Every structure is written in C-alpha cells, then in structure tokens.
Amino acid sequence: MQSALVRALSEQARLPVVDETNIDAFLIPASGEPANAVLFFTGDPKQRPEADDVAVVLPQILQAFSGRLRGAVIGRGAEEKLKSRFNVVVMPSLVVTRREHPVGVLGKICDWSEYIEKISVWLSPDAPVMVASGGPKAGIVRPAKEIKR
Image (cartoon, rainbow, N blue to C red; front, top):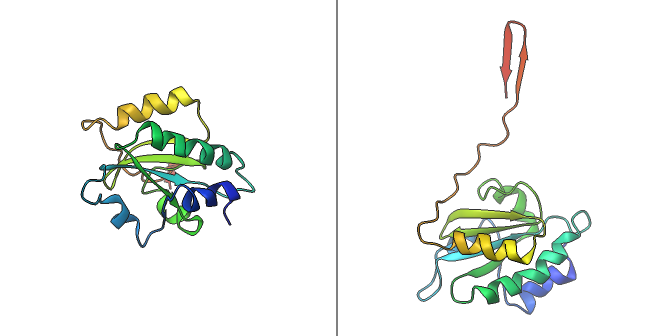
C-alpha cells in the first residue's frame, strides 16, 4: 500500500507506476523523450515515513531538470525484485538512469543542493554507469577454515 503523497505522484503528477513487467519498456525513451529517468523506490510507508518527503521533492526535481529527466514510481510489489538491478540498498531511494543503466542512487531524503549537484553530474552523457552489485559478501575465517557466502 502506498501513501497518499506517493499515490498523488501517479495521479496528479502523472508519473507511471512501473514493475518488472514494464520497466524495460519505460526505460527505453520514446521519440523526443530524454534518455535519463529517475525511478522512485518508496519502501513501506509505515516503516519509511521519509518516502513522503521524497514524494514532495520528486516533482520539483523533475521540474528543475525539465526536458532532461523523466520519472516513474516503482510499484511496491516490484521493489524487492528490482532493487539489486538498480543498486538500491535503502528505501526510499531515487535512482537516476541512462536508458536501462543506473548512473546514480540517492537514498533517503537529501538536501536540495545535493539533489541538484549529483543529478547534474549523472545527467552528463559521459557519466559512468553503475554495475549491479553481486550482493553482500561475508567471510568467516576460522583456524584452518575459510567459509565464504
């Protein structure tokens, strides 16, 4: 279940809600659309009330980068399946992509200046793309034994 502010993003700001079945189609820009997008991973609003703060800021970010960035909300049911693909570790997070490749992730709520500074860098055509994480690696070392997971 999404909060009222997150629902307003799709209803009033007309941001699509995407999931694992349609995210690839969303990430390929239509003719005339910018190649860059921002994906909003909200997390559970009961556990992550700061998602409402990010929901307020997201339309302002899209306005600040008008014509250079488009947005979507990741459906709650798809977040777990998609978070490793987009290097999301904490929720809420905003993921900036160039086509299907993530170029940066901003977790939780940030200062406005941080949004502007980092997103400006990530929108550069030569900004490096992120590599999907292989997940956490833990090593346990005992005398004469090494166990890696």
